[in-house]
Picture 1 (cartoon, rainbow, N blue to C red):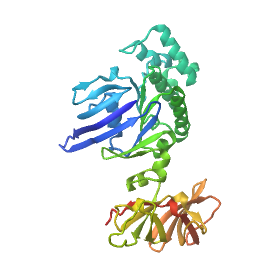
Picture 2 (tube, rainbow, N blue to C red):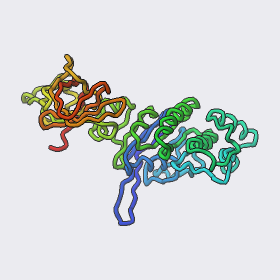
Picture 3 (cartoon, one colour):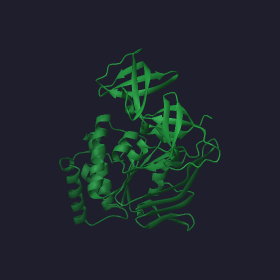
Length: 371
């Protein structure tokens, strides 16, 4: 449904500094998919979204929407935003404050290149306001709506265009935490029910994992890694993604020295010497990383007590934090610290010593960038 190929965009700052906002970005979004662009500020995610919308013009590359080429630098083609089969929700919602809910929704249906006849307008308004439960508010001024209600009006206005693609630029960032949680589920449910292909931008990792069918993690104008939320969280291929998508602990490791000329095959097991003891590593995971590596693991994978299918070690608690549904503990093994997220039934305090363990499969292998 959406294809971006070799997109490049360069900005020149007021101080003359060259910034590569997009550096050879390529991606494909399947029909009906909820695809999330996730990354820190300045990573290129909003520039990518605005380029698909046509609000931003890339320097080179090609963009296709619903099998139609809407931008091609080689062909000199650039379809204007109003003629692209998309609708966009902005972070600010961009509602007209002097209009009521009904007129905000119907305005793009009456004006512009995608206007439709009056009977069709009423059909669309009825269908979308029923779906979003907005019927009681149709004649209410925008200024009298809550933030969540305004968000629904902005979504209704976009969906009333019946676009092939819905573009969303951090639409929940202005809402309070409780409402954000509620609307994440609501937006995902609505877009899935209607079969809308959605390209969604956020810097919120939890939001990306809850809503996305697939996530593209961006940094420095590039897609660093792409995959399902489970793939990226459990098995990130880069240290950046491991750190950015949730919390991850890291410890140094040293792989056993392989005999000269020895063939290492996928499925073979190597041994990594670490502060936590000897940990078996799949040779495929360590391929090309060299002798020194980093091992990453999630705080919630730490288990109190020994286990037969992993590595156990003695730790000392340096700090603990009760956060309601869990107990966060900062722990030390020798000179190496890490964080454990434990069930809230534990009551460790500073100075306590205990044995904890991790499964061998809990460890992710990364190159040691410090060597």
